[in-house]
Image 1 (spheres, helix red, strand yellow):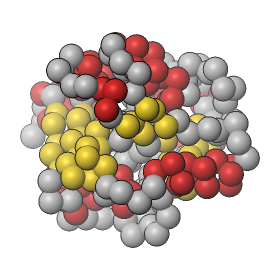
Image 2: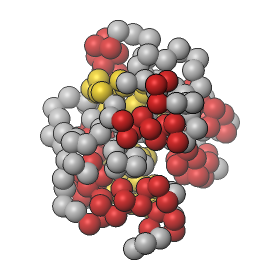
Image 3: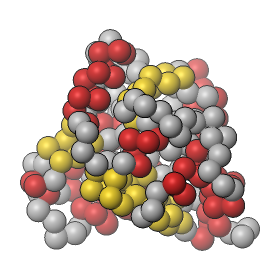
Image 4: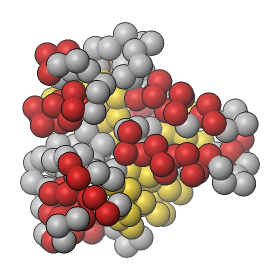
Length: 206
């Protein structure tokens, strides 16, 4: 299970260099916007194709969300693609509001579904502008598909990598607090084999 964000580029680049038979790996991704054209560069499936899959000499199976479907149909299709087996590995990050995928606060740590349609909060939408993906807040989609937190954490190992000073509060709160839906990153503490990897900028004040 892959996240798609600039903060994931170092992790994905390192993964692409590993001596892995990627043809034997099945990949999923954890979220995507609703309402963008299929070829939009901001689409997370498109971002992963150009940032990660273009680096590997293989043709692995990559199950992409299809935001061109009607929202409920897209949820159903991706839920079926995910199936019921655990992931071997979930690679994730934290948003500036500590979101996991597009599970903004308050997040549902006990969601019974695998995939949801969500309304993006303004913090998450502004992050996309600040990272240079959109020219202004008005151009950022207001809804997205996201894999839910319980489904993301249904994995043998979860590696969360976070870089940059803008994520300091998210990292600090996710480390300091007990599991709290208002800080979605604290859900990582519910997993017995979750690791948080950060750069110096993300913990500079700690």
